[in-house]
Length: 480
Image 1 (cartoon, one colour):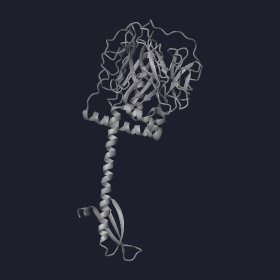
Image 2 (spheres, helix red, strand yellow):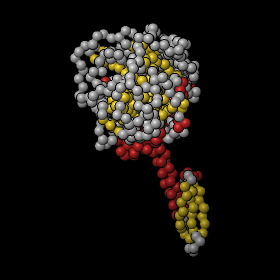
Image 3 (tube, one colour):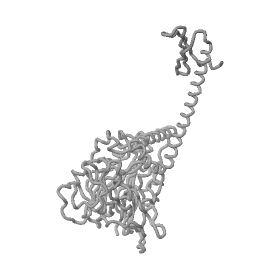
Image 4 (spheres, rainbow, N blue to C red):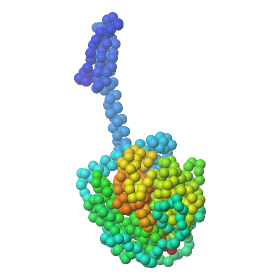
């Protein structure tokens, strides 16, 4: 009769039936009502049996809760360790629970990952490591560039495009659907590397003001080179989030007087279900050692905003007014701005990629950064959810293109990094682990190999853009 200690019973006369009683049995917060007759002692046993059933039910509920909690923790650990699994699961899940359902699940996952990372950092209290070895010393003088490389003169640009322009390659013709590497062997050239390299003479930039205390923050390091050893790109990092000192934002600066930007539509994304698609391949003339320097991710999937995308005369998605756009013109110019205000549907635009609103506009942070919705920035209801993010920016003089990427970033963190780098107009690219990816390309035997910007976090399918890609992407080539 030990279980009686869990039971509370009240016996009251029935209000409408003679010689009848009601027994109120309360066990573990759950009440039951039992009807009986006066003098019927079996009602007490009935109350005890009812209590035992409630007791067993509660234990089963607790057991199932523990199983669900363990499964959730295991799923979070798996997705944190192998984000590619989550990326593959996302597509079929969208067909079952929809885009909003997947977004809610991602927000829950990112929130748990962020809380875990914060707890780990607060317990260990270790200074974050630099994402790479820092050996370059940035100049405190104004940016210098060799005088032998001057901008080519071009005709007047359309009056509706007041934003500064820069020179880029003409877009290649539509690419074949199959890939074969060129048989010709180019002359030996210097190749990009992630190893520390002494600073050669040439192009450099003033150091950026540091936010934190990590050694080397804001100091530009030579990153990509041409065959003569001249610097084509620099890299540095910033620590702009005081709440998450481990959230380092990598910045790659390209000298747009020396390198060329290209855009490729993916074989599956972005595109509507019945719309045209690209082929996801780098042009054969560009995928050569010494010429192909770097590859990096594009923007959101079509289902996440249907932002405009066009390349090689293929309009995968029509452009939408009011959204941040990077455009390439037939004369070789590049522009980042707002479609419908800075950029328009002229015949000279041969490629574009839109993705959300501008993050930086005319050198200032867009106010939507601090109050944007899931429709604005993707994967976040309030813009504060932290995850891997990437972005693209252009200086006011149109001579430097920046790529930004890093883990544990909110939208304000990305915007602070862009503004610190003196970006004039900047836009968001793709977000989330797996999709944010940057790699330098170097010769390896008779082929090419990819070296990620971050050794951790960008180590999945490192060479994804050297073969046919389902997702859209950009790539950089050097002087021929």
